[in-house]
Amino acid sequence: MASLLRSSSTFLLCISLGISSTNSGPDAKTGKTSPTRSRSCYLQKAALGIEALQNWYDWSSGLWQTTGWWNAANATTVLVNYSIQTGSTDFRAAVENTYFVNLPSQFLNYYYDDEGWWALTWIDAYDWTQNPAYLDTARSIFNDMTRGWDDVCGGGIWWNKGRRYKNAIANELFLSVAAHLANRTAVPEQQAEYLDWAEREWQWFSASGMINAQNLINDGLNSSCQNNGQTTWSYNQGVILGALVELYLQDLDESRLQAANDIATATIANLEDIDGILHDRCEPNCGRDGAQFKGIFLRNLMALNDWSPDERYVCFATANAQSIWKQDQGPDYQFGLVWSGPFDVGDAARQSSALDALIAAAVISER
Image 1 (spheres, rainbow, N blue to C red):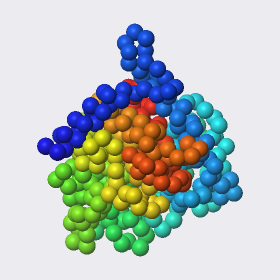
Image 2: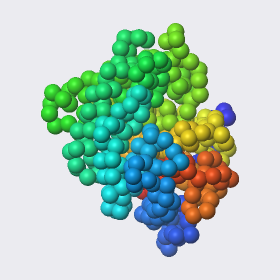
Image 3: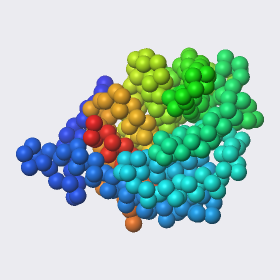
Image 4: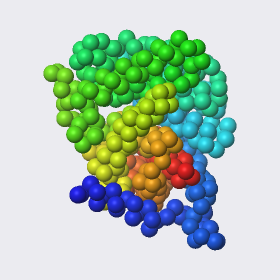
């Protein structure tokens, strides 16, 4: 009952807030803010937030001060997604710089999940620019990730190359990268290989026990290959949504979208507060990693809503975007950790996470 009440509160909040802003008034005939005006409003807000994000950008390293390696992949994705939605080329130089400065590493390291973030980043950059070098790099990264697969616990990849811990995020990213590549590969044999990896991963993951009875995903498996009962982080509920959408686009199996919707609605019901705002359990002390998580959920909810639109997702996205702007904004358009406020401090992880939410609200609100 409590979950139903929370979901209802999000819907009522959406109605009461509308999607109003100081930059975009209601339609003269209907009295409601039009989807086009709402989209423009959120993208204008995102533009101001991106200016703040880029104050932390270090051209010499191609990364962002105040945050880490995998976070930089997500910050790059924010620049790409904003550019796709607006048609802007303002950040093309920064994206290219991040790519070329860090290309000597091939975006590989000790952690398979880190590699997955960068693979998705360069797939998105390919979608934006059609530069085949980005897609080739994503393929190379994925090839390295496949080396993490073995038969321990019946399949799946390890979190790192020391083969200690099979967790949700590494396997969700593996699924997502495989499915994304299958949808962007013209050579039939290669497409079949990527699709096979994606289907194998989903078959294993969905039966692994990491998806619990509430349709939420716990952090990983214990040494007995059982759900370890650890925190249901928001990003673990997010990456799987985009992954299943891409897999659905390959086989048009509606069960993919149903599974994604089950996880998305469970997340909204269980991880939001009474005002419909998303939280992670670590708040208000989430460190550099946890500060990134929530935006990843919104970004992937945006992808799900493209193919399985739901008014609950519209309400959820707009409620969180409104709260970030009104309750969690600091100086110079910086955004903090706790989206219900108050603002704490600014850094590139907090900023790019909040920007994911603003961009998602722009896209979802126009559907």
